[in-house]
Image 1 (cartoon, rainbow, N blue to C red):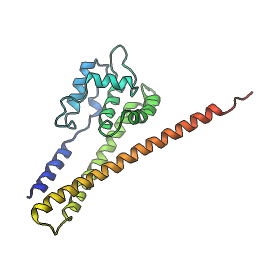
Image 2: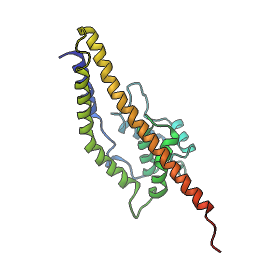
Image 3: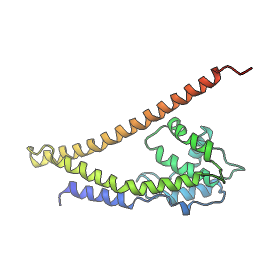
Image 4: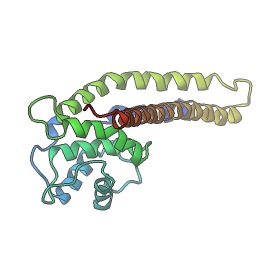
Length: 210
């Protein structure tokens, strides 16, 4: 087995071991900051970067609250909805800015935060976990497809050059995918924000009935 195939297998093995935060593991009781940090460290262990000591810090969480990405804690305690916000923020912050994350979470928090009668934030999270399971296999297939494409590139080069160029091709293929999807998300959020602003301005300009 060549080194590139070995590296791919290691990546796929790591991908297979990535686990989501199981809904049943999210406490349905209010937690203090230290308990929140411990929970996040334990539950996000499989997706944390190698050089990442902590999933989140107290300063980071306070900053998310300050920037209104989620409601503030009540009497220094964080609810299950706070935990759900933090889980989503953790994933989103790897490729989106705080302003965009806020735009994503605002409609969910406005309508479903603390809702105990209809559809809840927790229900939504459970559905997202279900979609993740469906998508995971397709992601793996796509990575293998891109790897095989990269192995067909620069076939006329000597072995040493070919290895370097094919690795570069593989990284570029993955990067292009990330770039396009990130751009799509940002554009989608931007368009939605413009539509909301337009609707808000229209409602303000509408004359009051006498």
